[in-house]
Image (cartoon, rainbow, N blue to C red; front, side):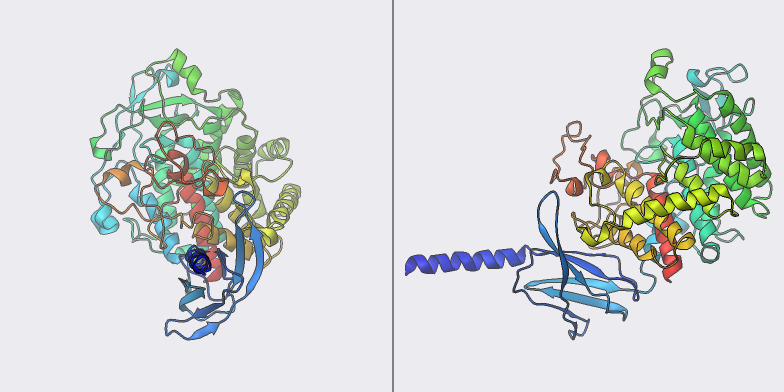
Length: 572
């Protein structure tokens, strides 16, 4: 009898423990009233009854499991629970056994997080003070004025010999470091320009409380102009080539910008930086044409784009190879490379934007020569997708038809996996989904592609799939993190970001998207870090030393801005 009694206690403990181990993964920011609302439950017992109550404790739904899914890596069984029938705004509680979790139904659910994602770019401006009126407790004095920047020996020319000084102020700090890179800046500006072009009316009424908010230009364009004005200074006026980056020789310590003391250099011109520059300047010239606040910019940008394209055609093999440069020039430069060994995608993008600006058939000839065979989600290292997006919004022609067909093939294949996915999302189901910056390059940019497909291929068909990618970012994922700082009930507190980590404020800047799960764990040994899991979708560490999974970068936040604002514009 005593053995049976003890066995009974053990079984009882196991049952309670199992219930206490129940986890609910959900969008921690909020669900739109009339859109899909899915929660994913792990650890559910077969006989557990589920119910949803409102803020008054009234039962409003007794949901059932829609389907089950098994992780291909951990083999954990998960249950997909659909509560989409709840459409009245408010806070609700899912009761599952002894486990309760609150979720919100909110009109414009993604608006505040979208604004924070864009406002981050103000907080990371370089060369100017970040003022309390606009930044609150994150205000700081100006750092890195960049009015005395040295020509690195790798960038020397007759007109600008090594050691000569140029002025290259403004722009955004690129990532967790304090340098500024043309390749990543071009990508970041471009994808936000495209979100603006697709939702002009929405952005015309958006106030993000930045110094330029009182002018007649939408705030998003003001923010992009702050970086574009820096980019113009990175072109050599003597030949049209563009310096690859503005950088210190080594990464700075984790100190605030005003305390940084290393000299700053512009380093080697590269074909990829020059073509990216040509593309985004042509795009900016077209979009900013006739703008009263920046009246002279459109013409400046067109001239700069044309000159850059000419230089790039003359220097097709001028790839940025930092190790080779360091073997020939001093000081050695050990900061981010943004290296790339082929430039066909950059050529396709630059020719596209110059043709759409000028209608010059010479550019269209180059477009056809460098057109890709299939659609690829745009990243800083493969920008052909940015060109594809621009063609979708262009007048109909053979190139546009090809881009539409390629995008449709991509979109259909992408959404086909959702019915068997672990978290009701097209992202996060294969090992290749995870890696450095995956949440932006895989999740956000794929979501943007689905939004383009929804608008130009089958309206109303792909939109909710893009929203599912946002749900993944906001907490419906294997880590249970909302991956945007300052939002949700569990978000990163220690991103790899020098300003935020050194400003003496516990809370990180809000609105930062971290890189996300990265099974490569390239920082594990160098940082003496211990990841909680080696599973691809759980390989994330909220530690300031985890540059491989917890860094912040402008291209990642730009992708987030594009996805979230477009969704909010569609669903408001």
